[in-house]
Length: 106
Length: 115
Image 1: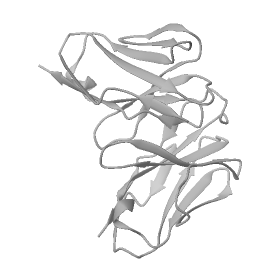
Image 2: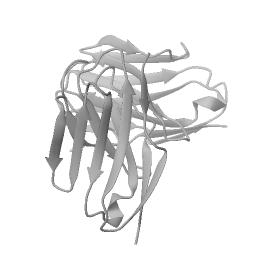
Image 3: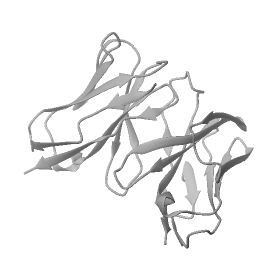
Image 4: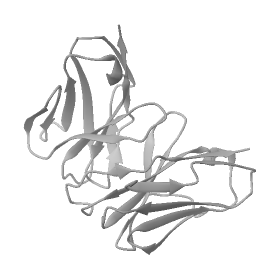
């Protein structure tokens, strides 16, 4: 079966660091994506991990451990505009997790 | 130029009606998808086509019928609409097939409301 889990909601303060976790169980696996979705908009691509380790891209980093079926998205120096839903997706039938709604407070 | 475009953006209709949503991509991608996002914001894959061939069909009621006349277009037809069909439907495309690394490019979404 396919299962991708994320926390439903998180809250953090502007300027802080937040880590959004994603655990997955899929029949096949070819990498893991992270997408950002602002309210009322389409999801947009943030990062892709196919090998274990950390991929850094500006304020955003993504980590993958294939043996543990685990990934996280790390957002540094949070800004108000980072308030959005963050979706992880397995590159196997492109299945998405339930999404994590992040609220950044001033 | 819009990369992935869907029409209509909003659709309000009565239960029992039949409706279609159209999607076109000008990115030259091989693979296109339909996703449904419900009120809880869960994004669920429905169908995927690669070069006009159906490659993913995720236990969607047969009231939903995708059609891909060519690799740049993937339309979604829904028969006998039900209240539970109310959602935002997203079309997306990617360069690579299932096992590829291509990111998804999404259309703006089509909000369907069934009354």
